[in-house]
Amino acid sequence: MTTSTRRGLVAAVAALGLAFGASATQAADIESIHFLVPGGAGGGWDGTARGTGEALTKAGIVGQASYENMSGGGGGKAIAHLIEISDSADDTLMVNSTPIVIRSLQKVFPQSFRDLTPIAGTIGDYAALVVNTDSDIQDFGQLASAFKDDPTKVSIGGGSVAGGMDHIVVAMVMKAAGGVPTDVKYVPYDAGGKAMAGLLSGEIQALSTGFGEAIELAKQDQVRILCVTAADRLDAAPDVPTCAEAGADDVEFVNWRGFFGAPGLSTEKQQAYIAALTKMYDTEEWETVRARNGWVNIYNPGEDFSAFLEKQEKEIGSLMKELGFL
Image (cartoon, rainbow, N blue to C red; front, side, top):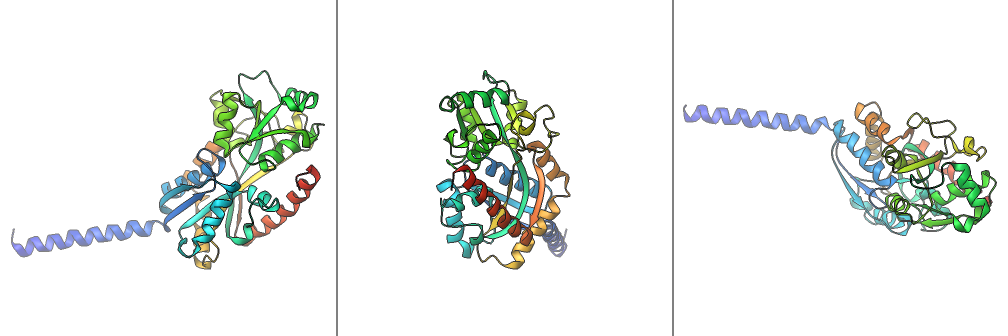
């Protein structure tokens, strides 16, 4: 082989490699996303970020996904961090959910969703009340009776601060079952994973948590789901009654989860994220993640998300005042 021929082959191979490289880059709509999680590993925020990242990358919509857990201040630490780094955070999406509305109302942190760039609400997760499978409590009726007999002897935990979403849910359910909501002996944990560990270790008698966090452990026979705050029984657990069926009349609650960008995020980047999430919904990869976690598709992009948040703020604020949390 002559030198000129060898050089020609090298050049051809190099050009082919560049072509494949360019093709691979173009295959992903967004090169990378860094997911900021305002709580610890194992909770609902963590699972939502990692599940969304898994679907986006496996479907080829996003090239790479990375994750950062930042607990503290009921989620306020991560919000403040995202605002602080806003000039260099074009690739960062923070996952959040109903607690950003609740904790802002409670002044747990000074910011609200208005200080960020709403990207989209993506899923809903119903709440559930669960017990350890070793518990003497077999159904919600027994839990409600024990609570009404002596609420000081029934410790119910959750992966949020006192007066947070998990606390509000159990207070709402117990009120609907005929109990006094402000009598709930609530034990707060930092993230759902730690709360579930508290239940399994016997620190608490029952747990208020997301259905998606409970269903896998229920399948492994580690926990018993007493009821779920859906209007109808869920396909993922058809034997689990709704809380209304179980004795908490007219109770229904769904916790949205979604994503926010930094303040000042360009409209172009915001629309790119919305387009990527919209595309994700039609993929098999997303359906695998969604079904595995028992999530409900509730999609509110852009301005629709902002309008939804403003409406929820009014509704939850009214409920919290009724329950004595504001």
